[in-house]
Length: 541
Image (tube, rainbow, N blue to C red; front, side, top):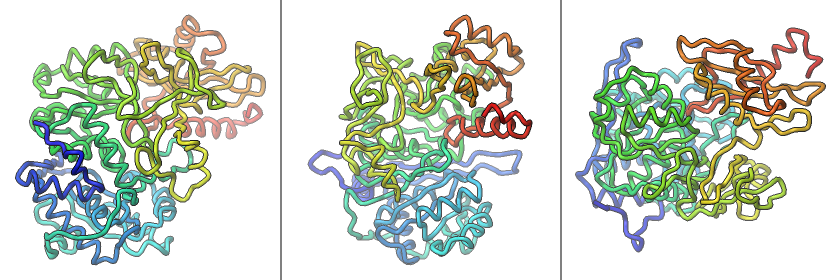
């Protein structure tokens, strides 16, 4: 059943979309939430569900509360919460009054939070009790942060004085505030694989574009249910899952966190039909004991990013019977500009074809388009504040560097084949310079992953006085697998040109990652540089 809003009645803002869908689908489920049991922390499960009408009414109450605090159009507020209904209420309530949400990772350090709150100019911060002391410490250093507000998101009887308990005192009647399509709705700070994250400015029109791109790409209808296990503070869960569901009158099953051991059990229990994941949690799922019952899921498509090996894709298909669809997108692009087709040939070793009306090119360092089969930087044509980000918050230099002549320069390298499919290669900056040759770290990592003992790897370059940089591979082995440094170096030497072969292999039990699974190579590199200095080997730097 197609329940899309007709073009002549297309909403202009996130709030307007929610209001219209609440009127059209008042009694239809919108949100089903579960906090899963956690025996280690002694936490029991908690479930909560809201229809479209009930969610909209609760958003009205939350919006009135925010207005009562003194928040208004353009004011920034921080949401420092795990996945929970309260996160969604604050997001949509802020959008309803023209305020700007700045979500943050609950695992962020105090120093990181102080910087993010200060740079964004957040006036209020909403957090669960476990983070109240941390944010109070931040507030003592920030004049603009007026108050830290305690939330109690996992109970039917919230604590006195918490946000949830306070909301009951506000009217659920509609709130009328003037908000425009190109008004700022959120500041989404990038994952932080570099030293300082940049704040991506997301407008109401941006959110609608993101949701529309995904909804169209997977032919989402009101009968679908999005399975959301990725963190809500990240663009994937907001753009791809929540907004696409809202645009089509579908529902979302929101889990408090990703759990590899419970993933398919909960997916089946809540009858989910569409899911979104990254490669890292997918590998965790493949590492779980096989359970034939998991084939009884209703998933008709699983969107994913960051790449799987052919053997992993085959194993996924055999074990779960949940069709995969690889895509490529960034916080800055809103929707995924590249995605494998729902109908037609799906080549999941690639990131697919242009989607959502996006115009995508590959260019060289001078901005000149490259021919098919040649590596180039992915650039995406778009209109700032509508189809791509409005820019970086309080960072004109970075905005100017990234958006040039209507093209967003992504910093990602890819190759396009003769049929038009794009294959991701690596980050443009993830290149190692060795003896005058450019070495793609991703290419070396792909070879290492072909070794049966290797679970994952990260290849980095370290300064070398003779050869510009030396290649170091940091490797995690499969459980109970064994391999030596010489064995892996020889394995690479048989498959790569000599200048691409790692000179050193370091074994670790895990790799540092961002909240959405991206390996933080800058942390590995800095750790090794510090070790060189401490050991007195700094002459190589």
